[in-house]
Length: 263
Ligand SMILES: Cc1cc2nc3c(=O)[nH]c(=O)nc-3n(C[C@H](O)[C@H](O)[C@H](O)COP(=O)(O)OP(=O)(O)OC[C@H]3O[C@@H](n4cnc5c(N)ncnc54)[C@H](O)[C@@H]3O)c2cc1C
Image (cartoon, rainbow, N blue to C red; front, side, top):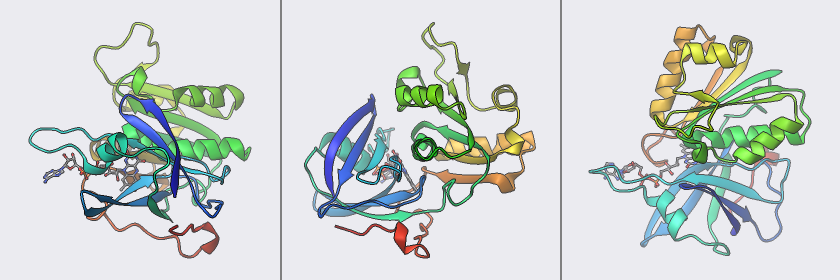
């Protein structure tokens, strides 16, 4: 695939938009992920990234990547930083997929709770874009935890979608201690009182949770303590080891129409 556009979403998040030649219509479920196959410094590496675009706009496919910084004594993340600093519009890349089962298409429900932290926003973006584009009769609470207002990915677009679609409700909660006085929204990490306040009917919803490992663990604990029926909770963790060591992704091979191949 060829990188056709790059958007600077936040100070440490970029969206890479791909198209393929010959002209390809991408078919996947909202929330699924793809695997990028790269050669960096002569070494082959693979990493998985959620497809942040929506299958309702099949002419392009995008991934939205957050830089993983160095945290002493560990080095900065290899692929995320390479994509941010070395990868440019016009360059080609091998991408395979789609993979995974983390999708409201696979697990439909009339009421959803999409709960994300940091880069875990990406499958929620895809699902929300898809629900709006297809006029699906689904009520969504989009609950996102970020550090600061500037770290909320696609905030303008989400606010526009919520303004046009009464079935989309946005809840942002910010965790940085010092926040601008202009921030009048929620503050802090997910807790039972925060859920009660912002999604009082959460237990009636099918919930999707995505984010880095610590966010996943903390959210699971809160949902359990809150009495949420965990069989209605779907999870995808971005944290931990790179894809080669992560739990093997499930290839959706029972639905050939949903596959896109390597180019
Ligand atoms: C299904 C799935 C979907 C995903 N979707 C997204 C997405 O949409 N957006 C997104 O931004 N991310 C996503 N991720 C995460 C992504 O796949 C990468 O894991 C992430 O970008 C980090 O990759 P990296 O190569 O930059 O970091 P890596 O080089 O893999 O490093 C990861 C961490 O390991 C540490 N490390 C590196 N080397 C060592 C060492 N020798 N010893 C100890 N520690 C070390 C690094 O300091 C860093 O903290 C997803 C992951 C999965 C599994």
